[in-house]
Image 1: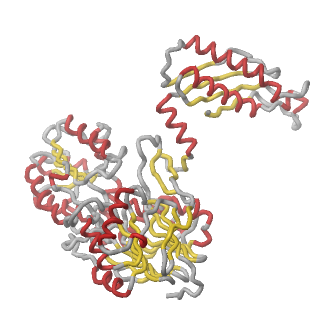
Image 2: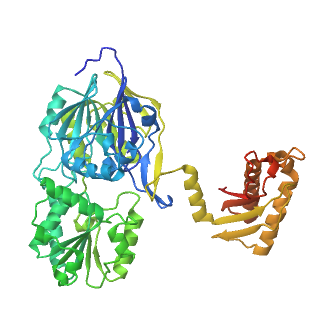
Image 3: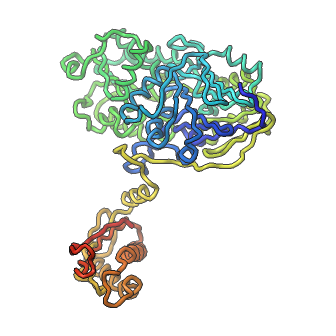
Length: 588
């Protein structure tokens, strides 16, 4: 490890994952080098119309892309790797180190996005140490989580060791037999850990998080009670859960049909790497199982979080082209809603029940356990690592506060820990920790087409159209600043008590008033109509019409002005060609 001769501070900058669940992204910066730890995504709220993916604001990384030396990936969940293909379109990451399963999943994402050539993927094994740049060494320590091949990372820096837990719980009987390497954590604690960044997701819950194996007998019970077709929905990345579901399908003599692209991809990768072991004959395509007795069929689907385009949601909405719910079906929700998804999940359950399905859900059924540690798991992590400084990570604000209280109960002084927000710059030295500033933070939105980012202005316009409706006005104006015809008015989704004919007349009067007062600002030279500032005039008309309409209608619809202007005189066109009548449209 390089010694800290210049007494430089280590900067730790979370760009996502704080005061929220999702888009976990963290920057470690020392002098002229940056390494990234994970780069996740989140899913949109109902107000984010047409948005498919939510990413952290990466302005800081774009501005400092020349410093980026590599990335550490802790595990393969979407909220930790889902943003990488989008980031690679904006800046290179020389090398990405991560577990075999996460790298297999990421490779497919990069190929699909056409950015595989912008980085190098390198797989790691437990206790592997990788060097990134001059200043950083990352040591991978096996942990236990709801996905196979998950790691805690000890980052060796010139100032000391910083441990980032990643997502974790302490499972003493993991489904795959890969136990948490608590010994290695204790060894680091014995030598001295400068700072611990720890998963806070379940900081409000007392006790230990149950083992994943605790779910097996409860799923077995529900499989036994199901007499017709059996649907099971869970997180597509929950390899251990899927493994148990497949074991139970075999035990109860059911064949399995997989519905949902992410589920298909995950199972294919997990089988190739040996994390899921079962015979090929267990899986049958959908068209085959249609002719089989209902009690022989298990349909494993995505959509446990009520995602709009996921298989289970489409089935519930009667939108799936090949699957319809019928009386006698049993649906198991082997997942709890993550914060923000509760309404979507409840609506999906209601629709399934209305169609005649028996739906099994809820914490009391015992068919789901969390992949995140509760208070006793968190205490054990602190006891083993014995950090000098502590920063609660990954969670909403109340979770971070509760985790800091737990850390204080374990003997870490309050002055040695900080609660931070996305964009805060942690400045860490051998003797101090503080917030030393802030970088750009927030969100970047990816359109449903996944072809481009959605600006805040576009999102605001979409929200306004959805809540207030739209108004389109078409107006033709001549060289003298007069209307050439009555303006056309079209409204969609606008609620108003004013009659349409009166409103159209009011629009005409208002345009005439604005032209009468403001025309000379945009066409000041007599006899030189070609110099008219049509763009400035349109902006003024849009602004004034929007303001007046807001006052008259008592609402704020999205306004689009289509302005038609006359041809320019032939003498004023330098290339000898006459310009055609032009029209422009800009949303207010």
